[in-house]
Length: 403
Image (cartoon, rainbow, N blue to C red; front, side, top):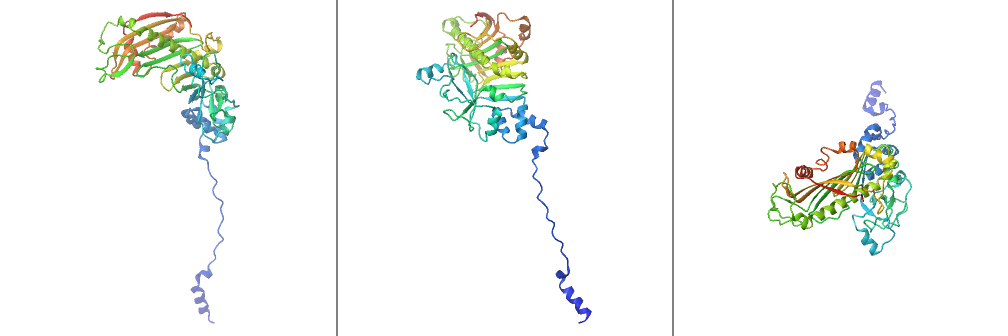
């Protein structure tokens, strides 16, 4: 066979003449957790924006890193889902007694925390069963002991409703650097009729520093108020808004003054009860700069700044002998009243009343701090405007004994 024929055979089958290298086997690229690339400072910024203690509890269950970072959060919100009683009795009479919102001292339960909660349970600390605290009781009598409690549906010991309860010190004990704490109750303690306005703000140290109360017998809008014939204290809408600021004689005879006294005392009792409940949290968290205890209705707000928090830690708390709440000292009060107050946004307040309260024996330093705009800036709009309009009217001074 000639050499030319051999070359022809090789060229006709090129595949047989090529050498193929063995494929290189490479391992799959490692999975990357992009959260690991984020610095701790950025994650803490995110956690501080979250704030809600239940959401932070869920974050603890995500990873060991999250579990170690969440306790460093300095801005925490405790949003309350329901309120239960410490009373063991579930009798009808006890249940009726517990519905009195004015005398209420309460425990707070945060429920509906979704799984996984094993890590959350470890984060919250030891659990305490609240089987002896029936959830059907909304509030309880002053003779009962009271505390705040956070609930979860983890694998721990459960009460009748399937919720494990934790005290506030247990819930917050691993938060070592809290500066701003906000607690929100599910609703205001004071039962008021529909259409009635009642709002209060109180500042406390070891005792009451000041309190501002805004109330109205009815709230309407100017376009619909022309045919309205008055609120719960019989005030007519045709009373001139531009008057000399004097309280009409009918205010004293138709129960208007009595109603305002009830509003004032009820608001002060609610504020002092809230203040009493905060003692263990304030004692435990010495890094606090601000503490706010409010409610979802926006009815009442208790404020404490850093100086007031420190004052409570160093000064003994005076407790009311009648119930477990802070003793309200003797008070000086200023009252402003308008039969009809129309705000710039069209809102009309019938029987609008503003009460500014301070202790009779308050120190000169505190009086100087609380002077100025503390009354007119106590409420958010549009109620701040109402307060500013009312303080321009005639002032009535009253006094109240300690209770």
